[in-house]
Image: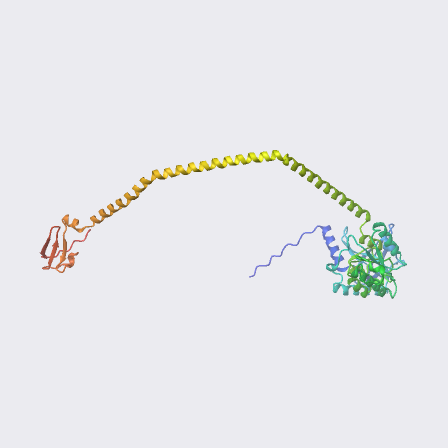
Length: 446
């Protein structure tokens, strides 16, 4: 039987952390979202915020519409009205309730435009036009800015006022275009492409006019003020989105109010909640830059002074070491004499050591020569003694005899003799002729 598989224990969440995680997941998966349903329980609080539910035959969703969005309502919502709400799904953490934060509310029947917006957004997102990897950060210190908006728009005044306050030293190149109406998308594309050519050509290159020939454009602003979805629809154009994605420099889009979103916002390198915010994102404040410049100047001045002081001290030390030339020459002469004395003393010491060594060798030579002659003689004597001990006559002199057959072959074993055999016994002083009377085998040792 196969043992049951042990499942890992699920992670333990804090309630608030889980609510925030769910809210973040909803925001990433669904927002912005559009919902159609009937209004139920509509109420307007003293703060100006509105609270209600949207329901149909299958479900119900709590909604909150904050004062800024509620002030833009073009009608008075009533119980049972069929409406379309656009906004952001989130979680009301104190109660853990799912709710829709409504940014805009309109009567049903006007939602076709928003559905078209969502389909277009989904298509371009699938193509990667919204990917964070392709977005670029605007230059922190731009040499020039391009601006696309309408000449009659309040956004133009807002942007120029912000730039004059923050970065009056940065030139602005305006490419005017209508920001609303049927021909607005094409006009906006033409204006952007004009700025693209200026950004790619740079100063001194071929341009449409002498004024453009000196342009340095590092960032482009595409802006307009707020309005209804129909008013902002030009910025949801697919071709305009592709033109923004093709920009050679970063593009900042500031269209409408903070709660307004357009396709241009998603494809831009950076989205600003308002035109004024777009100008602020595109330029560092002049005061900040001047303060940084002053810090750099002070730092360089201190570094230069420190270097000058160090070199002055080095010069003083060099002068102290140099002193008067005559005194330095006398010191060098004394040093030379000392070195000569050391050299002579060293040579005398080496000579004395060599003579002493030679005398030791002369005294040791006779003894070494004598020892060298005595050693071979002693070895020869010892070899002669060992050789004499091997002489067979010395063995015979001690009473032993050498037995051999008549043909001279030695007889070494009794078992090799036979009765009546003639043998010769060699003694120390002569030989005996013998005849074997009998053979006795030796008894085995116990």
